[in-house]
Length: 332
Image 1 (tube, rainbow, N blue to C red):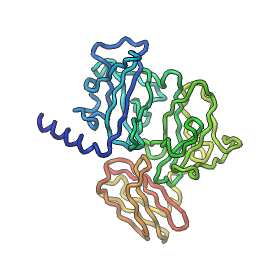
Image 2: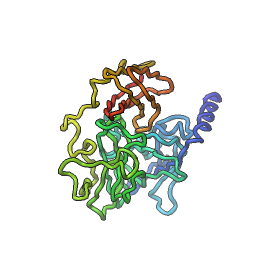
Image 3: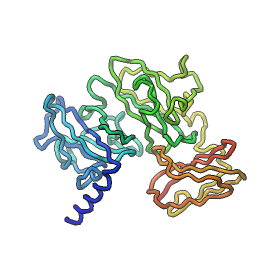
Image 4: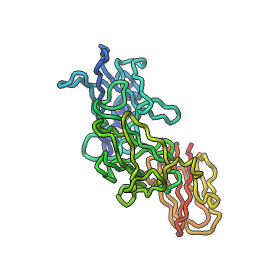
């Protein structure tokens, strides 16, 4: 036990340099509260200093003084990653809430809530006071943005969305992807406003905004949505009004020029270029962060696993003529 506690302490100290304050809050209005308390559990707990992840009895939420139906807790956890969680009316696994579909991860049928921490700014990330078993804070509606970026060479700054729901800030709202293709963000919008305009960005500046091809763009070139209830937008292909499957967009462009093998990879994989050219190769994680860059590559490139953790990565290859290929690489 002492050894386990020491390991946890060391890990907690190691995380301080890139930790971010995150506030979880739940509204228990109309719910008979369990005498053992209101808790939150998820895959953030070990990183926050608790012994185990998904332990329903260790992360106790504190009752608010002004509104006794509200319970919250603030934890320090690493930024630039997504976390899954649920609220518990009690301290047992069977006390977990039922999470509505619009709030779920959904990838691989995952039915937990999720939150992506996209910055280390000196503030507290706070999604809002979510009703127990609900979708959005009282007086607001859920609006879930979803865009397929598989036909794009993803900008190292990641994919974003901007609109009048957040004052058209290009770098404020970063999207997250569970599969390396569809990027998402859950916003909470005011019920007093029904019409919202927005655009997706491949990057985080106003110049990175998509130019939309199709009839879904208004006179200003923006997408529009009428929000009369919790709304999960249909997945659309970046810069288009339809999804990538309908458009016939494959996962890679100029795919015949590049071969990636083996894939999945255990220790290494090799890129072989069939067309002679000088390539730049970027490897990004599913949040869009560039992890490695290789320049002036001619015929082949051996990519060692090295410090890449098991998971899904994007291998983006571009030659001097801006022809590119985007491959999904699985590291085992």
